[in-house]
Length: 199
Image 1 (cartoon, rainbow, N blue to C red):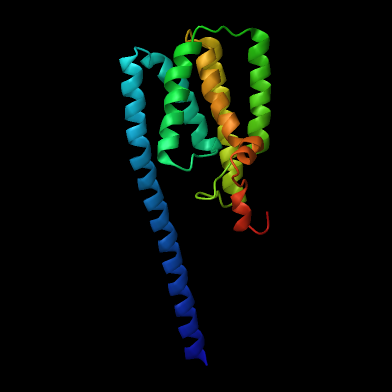
Image 2: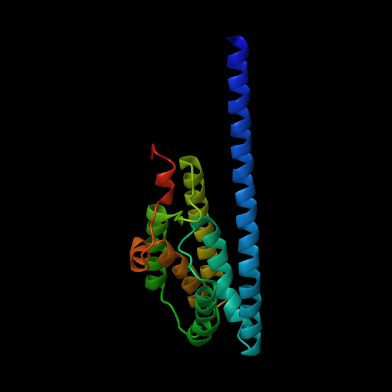
């Protein structure tokens, strides 16, 4: 009986180890896929903005977006070609046409409070391909997204770059985590609930 119990324990331990290894492997594959999908889009974005002489405007918009999205998550396009087209519009053409717009102090304050409220309520937003499993992890990402946004806000207020561009970049993230956007594109929010039964 003792030998049987030890044998069962070894089998269970072996299966748990295999499961963890499989999860780590899937994470690695997903990371490689992200790199392979994002690097060409990034290079295309840089090349187009350089061609149109709008590279600074593109970077002023994209950098806040990329930093905040790292923690806040959000919706992803299902097809790579769709994502590429959206990326060009969002970070090449819109910044090039809107960089001259001026924001008032009242507009900045409204943007600040609405953004923090949205991040507190909806960040981090996951996808079916990448659910954010673990309540502790989600709380950690939520805090980091709010801190990151506050740092971006300081840059907006105290640097001479056009204020509207970082505001546009962060607004893209806020739209990508909002439930209305998920419903519009018929995608499911809170995918972690399929795994975290206690949440």
